[in-house]
Image (cartoon, rainbow, N blue to C red; front, side, top):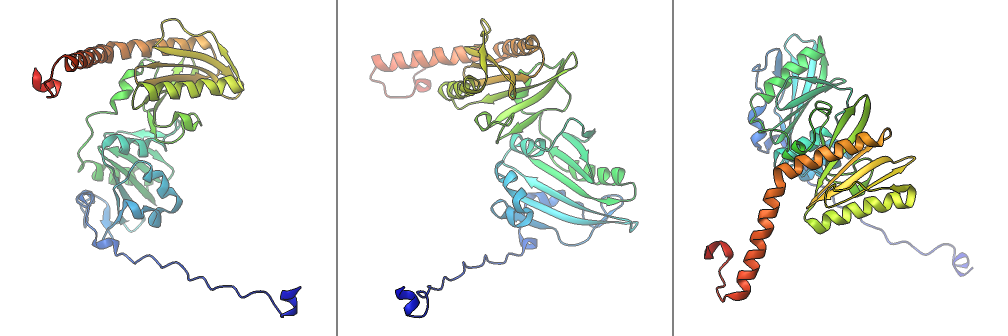
Length: 337
């Protein structure tokens, strides 16, 4: 009432707008990726139109918008982009090179866009084609070539290949995938996600692959946790999810160091286990025995490759601790040998 009697509301303080971000000429920024862009007409059938741009990782959102967050999750260093025109005059293309700290993160950024129905093309390390776009994983780089032209598939694939062949390849796919069985694994189905896996945030940072066992499709994942305790926590959280929403079944004897099996109407059937700092799970909606077979085969492969190393490392650590208790020598164990 007092405010109304005075003829209005209290004056609001003017709020100064946030300062505008300084304008950056991205054509002046340098990057090792620039050497991989074909100049002039070095790529057959294509001509670089203008000076390419280099966008630092911390500014990638200004170039890609919301999609930039997906690349930030993999610690993208920078993005180099060049625009091309077909020398025939009947086409255009944009080549984007995303650079990462290592080939695993580059593979992850590339792989999250893969789908089983995609058409893969023979470009190393791996490549596939979606509508109007060729995607290439090559070493610590993810290359994306987008555009349209006459005979677009052949033209864009040729341009992508011209870029990729200039780059150093990765030695292989991330080593974790070697733990999965190969006979029933769907070719090129491997992915790596720093975000959700199987739609669950508790299964982040997982290496995933699709399997086809007798016509039944199943998903497998491996999470290399920081240590044993972290792995045990992930496994317990995954188990609790089924306790709250579904039901637990009988565990599998002698599978890993800890395991559980469970089923839920929406989450499906799962078999999950832990070996040292690795969490492994297989998920599907059909026969439980097929999941068991995949889990046992993976357990065997892991034991055959790393278990001896883990046991040896534990014994060396125990011996080092015992020695440190009985001697005044403060040097590290390796220096006392």
